[in-house]
Amino acid sequence: MQRDAVMLDTIIRLLIIGISRGTMYVLMALGLALIWGVNRIINFAHSEFYMIGAYFAFFLVSMFNLNPVIAIFIVACFSFAIGWLFENVLIHPLRILGGREWLINSLVLTLGFSMILQNLALGFIGPQFKGVPYYWKGTLNLLGMQLSVERVFFIVATVGAGIAYYYFLQKTKLGKAIRGVADNVEAAQASGINIDHIYAISFGVSAMLAGMAGALLLPLTTAYPTCGVAPLYSAFVVIIIGGIRNVMAPIIGGFAMGIIETLAVSYLGFGWDRVISMAIVTLALIIKPHRIEEERA
Image (tube, rainbow, N blue to C red; front, side):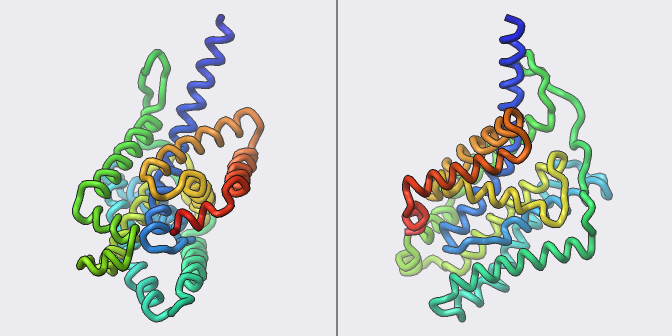
């Protein structure tokens, strides 16, 4: 009986760790899916918005001693502004002047911008890992288990962000306009929607979600020039499997991916998390090879 109780406690703890790890994937996947669905591009620089959020949160918390909640809010606003500028200054001219090949060119542009930001961070900040040991100390007693206050906060904050994001898209006028552009650009433009404005707002919201992920998970993942690459890959996995048409799919898929990877590392060893996630993607594409095209249609 005691052995079973210990095993059950271990499994529950691993699930909590996996869910808290999944918060990063949820926020990253929501932002990536938004750009994929609305702006019709794959944004390889999405990982660097995560990196910017992590670095910015580090400086705000460690150097200016800001409350973590206030710091995350500031990071969210700053990331939104960066994403909005990125779309207006770089993506918009490419879309207007790039002709039929602009989508291919956008892949090169976002990949190049990603590499530029990584090397700027390496040059100005250095390769050292930047992080904070914790946002808050202490544990909570939940159903007889001692859970880290931080992990509970990560999960609650992500669920709250997901609910707010869903409400934004479904209930607000701007959110409905974004969904309209995602469904049919020509019809949305004919109905009077300023699609350039929607593209910029969508990019800003996407960057905001990525920046929040980097800031929120700073105590667990730390900041360094390429810290957003692994979360980006996992976000791709989530949206390829779950799709982009349903807002809940990236949320459920992100938490599920966090749990799967945590269990893989715990029971199989380090490195197996990536192997299993890539195997899932491969299997999904073998079963339904035209899934990506169907999502974009």
